[in-house]
Amino acid sequence: MNPMSIRDAINNSPRESFSPSEPLSVVGVCLDEDTWSVLKQFAESAPLIRLRSHLSEYRVQDTESANDWLGTPAPDICIVDFDRDRRRAALAAESIHSAAPETAVFAVSTDAQPDLIIQAMRSGCSEYLLKPIGREQLLNAVARVGGRRKERLQPFKAQLLAFMGAKGGCGVTSVVTQLGAMLANSFSKKTLIVDLHPDFGDAALYLGLTKYRYHFFELMENNDRLDAELLQSFIAHHSSGLDLIPAPEGNDAPRRILPGAVAQTFEFLRMRYDFILVDMAPGLSDENLEMIRHCDQLHVVTVSEVSALRNVVRHLDYLTRKEIPRERFRVVLNRHQKRALISDGEIEKTIGQKIFWKVPNQYAHVVKAINGGDPVAQLSSSDVTKNLRELASSLGAKPSAHEKKKESSGFLGLLGRS
Ligand SMILES: Nc1ncnc2c1ncn2[C@@H]1O[C@H](COP(=O)(O)OP(=O)(O)O)[C@@H](O)[C@H]1O
Ligand SMILES: [Mg+2]
Image (cartoon, rainbow, N blue to C red; front, side):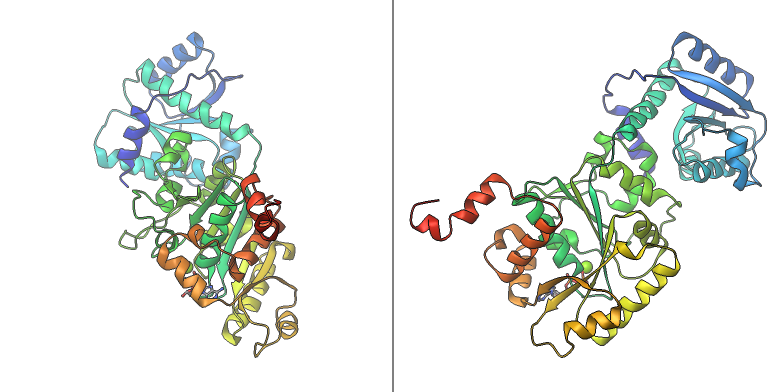
């Protein structure tokens, strides 16, 4: 997605009125005199911002000390002038963004060339203000930061559950889409699936969702500008009530996701859902590692095959070496059969921990669910459905009233006693 189109979408959307409880702290970097005095007047006339300091040089070498340089706590907003030296300004913006991801970075400049704006946005700026800065322009930009701060102060809510295959084809997307549809439909839980594949994700296909414009990597690139309205343009809605943010199609240019973007984006999403299920690509990419560090539980989905089980062991060893607590890992054995060549006991001995969940092998059911694009239509009494319903309950979800009624209308229902 073109960053300009996102910026335009934001700028054209109506804002709720903004009245922060305390002013947002602002640090200026290399601002010219006129811009600094516009800011001063703005701060004096409205109690929305408080000017903290003005730094007269771009510090780009010592990224480590960006926090000392900006002062602690990090300011809410850093306004960087791009006119004195564009390259150093971009580097400074980038180092502020990575040292203090919660700080909003605004670029100011006289130059309105689209490629320069895009470049500034890529270096982590969430706003591009044209000189001379107008009051309205500044007010809108500050209001957006205030709105996001208000949202951040709300406590986290969703359980963030990540799912990764020991190798491709173990059934991650099948389990995630069916469990997600079940949580949304039978348990009336506000549920989101995020397809974290950098390309060729299948979650949208398995849910029969074809109408979407943007994908999750674009959302991460724009997380600075993220608010409830912008989020809506990224969500594909499934008839079960489940929400999905899909993966890129696979024909996009490779992306450079800034460190911290995964965690920051999920922090925002967590406030809006009861459950977030993440469909991860196999492997230990930077995004996957950040996801694993940030999630509540990592479900390693495997099948009872030597190569997959060997990968489970390798993954768990590697992640333990990376100091991720062992309690975070859950091994899900998919396509489970009672009389398998490798026994459950042998598997547990190999992986060095208990199997958390076993999903039965039922190819016909799973394929029907995939081909129909609607896991809920398949919520019959199949073994996989029953099993995933129990999994949903074990995650703490309680069946909704209409689901309870359906459950009790089995045998008693036939007798007219439910
Ligand atoms: N519980 C199951 N029983 C039988 N077949 C399954 C089961 N779960 C998944 N499959 C099959 O395994 C294949 C791969 O599943 P998929 O969910 O796409 O895996 P992944 O997302 O891990 O690559 C699909 O053809 C699917 O039908
Ligand atoms: Mg998949």
